[in-house]
Image (cartoon, rainbow over all chains, first blue to last red; front, side, top):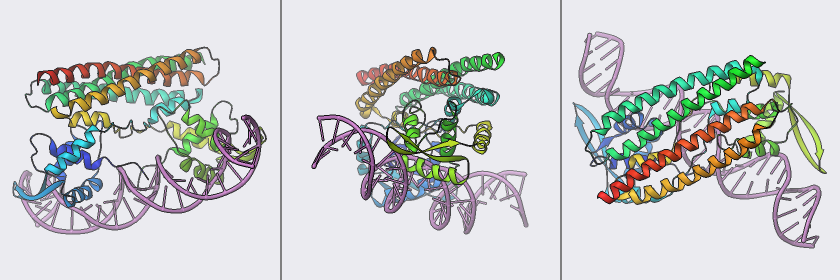
Length: 185
Length: 185
DNA sequence: TTTGGCATGTAATCCGTTACATGATTAG
DNA sequence: CTAATCATGTAACGGATTACATGCCAAA
């Protein structure tokens, strides 16, 4: 059996945020693709079926709402749902099996592939720099907020920044090593 | 269609390492669970079927070898396999969708769950410290090696160290924030 | 001889992505 | 009018883990 899906809990958690305003599947996807996209992902193919299942289990309740003329089926978390979510929060988070293709390629690398490895490294270093800058910007914006959720989101932003920064440093050092090997050979 | 499996290339890459000595499925699993376990994982359920498929495609060739009395079916990479592997190495590595349950829980956290979050954070920080120390030890050992594969493995070890170090720093800062909130409320 | 590790595999199952399908609304 | 976007879904597919099954060899 594959390990337990965390999708239902993500959904419950998002519905539980910010005062528990009802959200549609589309809204939830927006949240995931927005603020948390750098450490989590869900597809519609997961969200909509799970939403139905959660409603059937009375962990969330559906209510048809109209916004801007369009009909949307929005869901709100129930008391039962809050309990379920809280129990999941207590459980020790699994350290998911990291699969980093860049590191893997570096590990498997040999002299002949150095130019390609350098290309990959440069590309990802630049990406990491961009990400870091973006997070820093968001952090600036978050600093001023008074919402009770803010400190938690700040912590995750700082995680992204720290990770990106460490990555850039390491990438630069590794590039130096690779270029030295390339020249020497 | 789910994205292309990288398992065959990992296997080809490992068979390509260190002079291309023939390895069995068991050996390959040992390598993966050993040096690269912190950034890659494969199960027997993946390895053995892929091994057969690769042999059928003539990317590796099977040969029954005896070691320590036991019979083992070991595989060696072929010239065709090396080409396939090299082409994969040229391709830009995908930045796999990171799913970090700890960060997710922090993001979804609210005041009531702070004690649990602190527990999770402490646990993972201590894990990261241990990992970092372990990598540092391995790095010491690797530094002296003259094998041509060594520099690449050193780079990946340094990645692990840098990541672990950054994580510990961030975790300590975050713990301070959480404890401050807890006291203040 | 029986226990346990070595070694090889298969089957069931489930998660998650991709692709497809549909309709309603708004902007041009 | 029509193209784009909003919004909601479903079906098919494939990857990966887990659990199960098997047999050999060595040591107690």
